[in-house]
Image 1 (tube, rainbow, N blue to C red):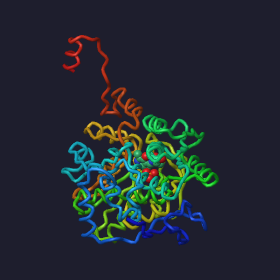
Image 2: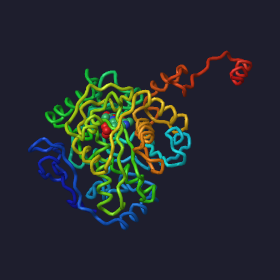
Image 3: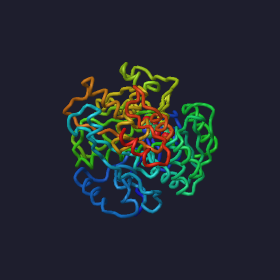
Image 4: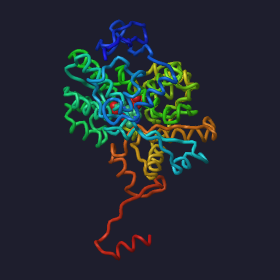
Amino acid sequence: MTSLATSVQVCEDCGTELDELNPAGACPSCGGLLELRHTLIGEGPALRARFAGRRSALRGPDASGVWRYREMVLPSARLDPIVTHPEGNTPLLDSRAVARWVGFDSDRLLIKHEGHNPTGSFKDRGMTVAITQAKRSSARAVACASTGNTSASLAAYAARAELPALVFVPKGKVAGGKLAQTIAYGARTLFVRGGFDECLTLARSASAELGIHLLNSVNPFRIEGQKTIVFELLEQLDWKAPDWIALPAGNLGNTSAFGKALREAREAGLIDRVPRLCAVQAEGAAPFARSFAHGFAERVTVQPETIATAIRIGAPASWNRAVRAIRETNGVVTTVTDAEILEAKAVIDAAGIGCEPASAASVAGVRKLLASGTISRDDRVVSVLTGHLLKDPDAVAEYHATRTADRPHANPPIEIEPRVSEVERVMRG
Ligand code: F0G
């Protein structure tokens, strides 16, 4: 298979075009974000059949829930240098317990669980593409700023590709599971005295000056991989689009990816109508929701604070493309409190599904919009859980330490002497 030049990188702000293999990372003319445009190979029914045919693959890129959709991701990538675990192939679950808590009578709610990816978050879908592309364009080292999941994913994929990795994380604000992964997979880990926003600013200038490839979601190849969350869930619904797709929003890369995926799925004839996006932010870190409330009249920044450390972000980088995603899908941006996030998480966890705090925001947001009537009882909704329960064990231990009025789902462990009578006492309640 030869490498066909079927994609270009285009600056979203000034329209400058760059070759697909150009490693610039940002527009050399105006500094704007780059977006990939593909020459589409195939149309709806033929593409759907091709994607379905690859589902039986046992190994290699076809077995990946990202590369199976490669005509929509990176059509020119040759199959041999692809760095894949594989990733994707995550389940679309129903849960009566979660649906009931949200306020639906029936199974109108489905849960797309991205925590089932190899490093436990959706970041792996973007990282397989970004690392593959870094290899294709002869990168010597890769870097990212992160609240923890991107760094875990980057560290793992860089190790698989035998590339040195450098990560910038906010000191004291990264959940234990994510930090453990990042260090164990071998990334050089820098604890920056500041928040995620300072980490990203530093990572951007350091990468530019030192010639390191920056693999945050400002990197357009990350966005291409993350689009496959949407393609895969649509395929799991036999390409019958739901009414809503809900997701947590922080740096806004994923919101942008979902918007692009839906636009392109529609253009390619994979679906005939576009679901509405529902982006959910934590109340203490909600610049995008505040701006949405005023018709996106201005770009807002805040000093972020939330228990959901993954989305503790005050100056999101993928702003303009996320605005486009919300506008094009007639979407909504909402907020939920930390208490609502923790309650949603406890319900999702106790349903045997489990997720990290930020992920639960998507379910808490749906509950809020159903109560306010924005989402109707007849709507079909897919909530995306972005990360695994084990990412943040401290949040679990803290919530379940004691049962209180505001923590009704707490399940504190019970200490006993090693005697059957003690077990009987506990069983009697
Ligand atoms: N959910 C989880 C579990 C995340 O880790 C993130 C982002 C998001 C949601 C929000 O996605 O930033 O594309 O809007 N985590 C990044 C990181 C910032 O560094 O791991 P977004």
